[in-house]
Image (cartoon, rainbow, N blue to C red):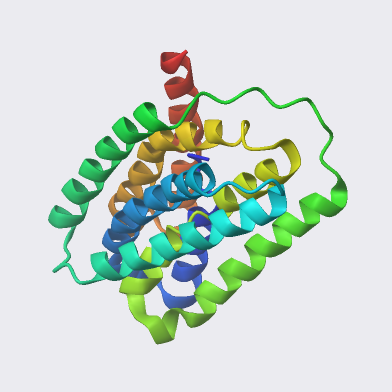
Length: 228
């Protein structure tokens, strides 16, 4: 979940359709939006923990609504900040640190899910949800401006799908591990936005994304080796 999957596609098409200067204005807001993403994941777990339901689908839907509400409220609050990169970076780093402590204290270790084959219809459904979300974001970009475009680019659309599908298919003891993993791998998403800001003005759109994705894969590989 630390790979820039949804964020990468969102920002790429923002730059492709609205121009690189538009994306450069949105990047500090994207960094700030990572704080909302962390709250989204943590709120999902808390909603399921304190308001459980015997039916997994009902529990997942209820947790989803709480998480989306938390993301929206946090994003509207962050939008009020007089933002520049010098503000977005320390706020996000502080949120990452506090979230990491909270997750280690509250979220229990998860069990390993059984090995199951993912069906083609399920893969297509996930891809369709991601595509519709990203198309909606980039389509609204000219209306909502770079600030909200940046914040929404950080919305954890892929993480959201994984949490819901694991919750419904495997139960509440499996998906918390994804939240734990996201709590430390989110630093890679922060580096993703910073590298975009650094490389886009000098390397251009396509080369920048090739470099950034290669860096992200190597960084997460090394992070996983260090963690284990």
